Length: 273
Length: 273
DNA sequence: CGCGCGGTTTGACCTTCATCAAGGCAAGGC
DNA sequence: GCCTTGCCTTGATGAAGGTCAAACCGCGCG
Image (cartoon, rainbow over all chains, first blue to last red; front, side, top):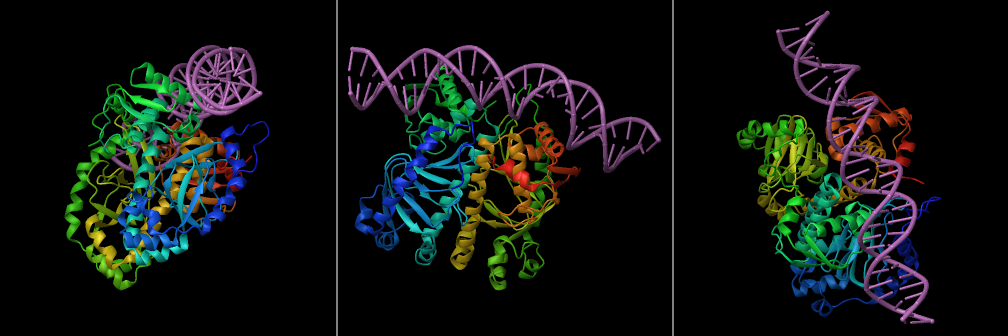
C-alpha cells in the first residue's frame, strides 16, 4: 500500500475510500478465473478482436496469443493494478472502462488516463506499477504475464511493433496532457477535454472537429473529470456551466454533453489568438 | 508554424522569441552535415556509445546502424524538431542537452522533458511532431530516418526491444509529471524536481535518496525550470528561496544546488503525512 | 408520497500563485 | 572603471481557482 491513512483532519474523498474497501472483495475473482483460458473462438466474439493489439494478428497467431492469456471479469470498482506493487502483468481491455491514476498520501489523486475496449495497459511500469488501475464499470480483460510476453515477441514480432506504436501513442497523449495540466486555464482544460473525448468516441476523425450539435456520451463522474483535469469538482461544474451559459455546449443530462459550437471550443482549447 | 504571432497586448517571453529567431539561422547546418556518415570508429569515441540505445548493440551491429545514421552538430538555441511539422526522423543525443516542449499560440510554453547524452528522441510523434526540440547548448546528434528505422528492426530486433523499453520509461516519467502538474503545490514541485534531477544525474541510485549535502548541477535557466514545472519564474525563485530559508537546500550559485536535507525534500515531494 | 442519499450545482470567502514593477548582481564591452 | 545587458530575486497587488457550506436534483425505497 502506498497511501497509509488519511492524516488527521483531512478527509479522504469518498470515492477513494470506496475503491480501497473493494480491494479485498474483488481480488479473489482474479484467482478463480485463472483457469479460464480463451481459445481463438473466444477471441472471435471479443469486443476488442479487431481493435488495439489484436487487430494486427491473424486468427492462428491470435490462437497462439490466446493460449497464454487469462480471461478475467471484474465488477465495477475493482482494483486491477496498484501503484507500488510488483508489475507482473499486462492487460488488454475487452469490455468496460478503466481509470488509471496516481495518488498522494493525503488523498490527492491524478487520473493519468482512461482505458476502454481494445486498449492495452501496463506499459507505464518499471519493476513496480507506477499507476493504479480501477474498473469504472464491469470489465473484461485478457491478462498476460510480462515475462511470458517477452518470449512471445520472438514468435510474433508484429506484436512488439504494435506495442511500440501503442506506447508512442500514449506518449503523445501524455505530452498533450502535460500542456493541459501545466499551462491551461480551467475553461481551456474543459474545452480541450471535450474535443479529445469526442475524437476518442469516434464522433469525429482524428484532427477533425466534430459537427455542431454532436452528442457526447460522458460516462465519467465529475470527480473523475476533476481528477483527470487537475481541478476540483466545483471548478469543473462551474466551467461547464460557463460553457453552457456562453452557448458552446448544452448539458441535457449529467452524462451527456452536446457540442453546440465545436469551432469555438477548439479556439478556447488551443488558446487561439 | 503553429504559433502565428503574439496577440496584441500580450508579450511573448523573450527566450521564446529568441529561439524563434534562431530557427532560420540554424536550419542550414543540418543539410550541410548530411554527408557526414559515421563509421563504427566514430561510434567508439561517442559519449553515448555505452548508454541508451547503442549499449544493446555489439560493435558490428553498431556499424550497421551507423551506416544509416547522419551525424549532426548544432549550436545552442538550434531548433531540432518543430511541433506540427512532419515527423521524418528519430534522433539519438550524443552530446549536449535538449529541451522538448509544446507551446500555445499566445506564448505559453510547457517543457515536457529534457534529453541528454544517450537519450533517444522522436518517439512522441504521430505523422507530425507533437513537440518541439531545441538545443540548450551545443549538441551532437545521430539522426535516423523513421522509415529506414522500420527496416532496421528486422535486422536488429534487440533495438526494437530497447526502443520499447525507452518508450515505457518515458511513459513512467510522464505519469509522474502529470501528478506533479495536476496536483502538487509549488514547493512540492520544486522538491520533486530536485530529487528527480539528482537521480537523473546519478547522484543517487533510482529510488534511493541522495546523501545530505549532495551537490546538484542545474544547467537550466529559471525560465526552463518554470516552464517544466508549470509555474512562473517568480514562483520558482520564491520557492527556492523558501527551501533555502527552511534549510532544506543551499544555493551557492545560480547553477548549483546543495541538497542539505534530502529526507525532508522527499517528505515534501511525496506530501508525506 | 415523502424521505434520505449521493452526486451536482451554486454562492461566499480565502489561499495560492500569477502579474506587475523595482531593484540586485554578474559578465562583457567600451 | 563604468555602463549596459540579461537574468534573477524580492515586494506589492490581483485574479483564478480552491475551500467551505448550503441548496438542489434525480432516484430508489419504505
